Amino acid sequence: MKEGTICHRALPESKFQECKIKKDGLRNDCRVYSKEYQKEYYRKNIERIKIKQKKPEVKEKRKKYRQRPEVREKERQYKKNWGQKNKDKINKQKKKYRQRPEVKEREKEYRLKYYQGNKEYFKQYWKDNPEKFGTYYYIKKFGYTPEEIKKIQRKAAQKFFQKNKNKEEYRKAKRKDRRNHRIRHPEKQRRFLFNERKLDHNFSVDEWENKVKETNGICPICNRPFEEGYGLSLDHILPVSKAPIGFTYTIDEVQPICLSCNCAKRDRFEDYKCIIDNFA
Image 1 (cartoon, rainbow, N blue to C red):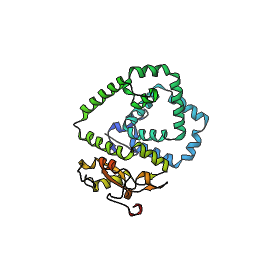
Image 2 (cartoon, one colour; image 1 turned 60 degrees about the vertical axis):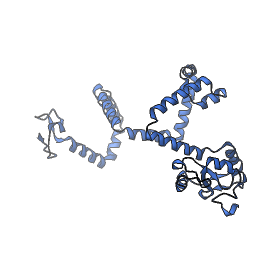
Image 3 (cartoon, rainbow, N blue to C red; image 1 turned 90 degrees about the horizontal axis):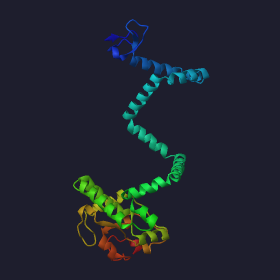
């Protein structure tokens, strides 16, 4: 133990910096006090320090100091330890940096240039690893998905399913994906009419999920029960084919019904529940 004559703290000797001039080989102030003093000094003399740091002789001196092998090793070890302790902070900064428009453009140019210089490598990689590329890639390249690729994809999907089928998280995610697919990916014909008539939805996914919960998983037309409402699909009370141009659907102008009732309903809406008087 050692008591600092400046900081007046009784601490282990490891908490004091080395000093060859002193008899015991240690400084009179502990590391914590020294750090606090340096911060306070920098805060009070920031302008004078900045002017001094810009001088050429000071820059040259700092450069020579950092080129020493022991200093470089110390800096490398410090950066490595800091990076391991602050992984989340670093990832957030990287994500924020990559969202800049100029950075995105630069990365896009770099990828294109790299691809053009390594075309042979990529072609060979595609041949050796066909299961790592999705259906969209093959449809875009050949116009269809080859049968041997389908077999490889099926085997990979079955292997993943067998590994995760008993996990409750996997089941919940699967059910949620099915519901989101019904909400965000309507039939091709309806999507075509939506674009042609300039129609739009003005409600969030949370509002839709709350409306589904109100049904308690029961179709309001045929009264069939569905597990947690995952069998119900989005139905437009005013049919898309009869909606005026530029019309916007709100949460009160859609309803959750089962897929069979939705298909049987077609473009009729007079005899069904939740009718809006304005469109009758």
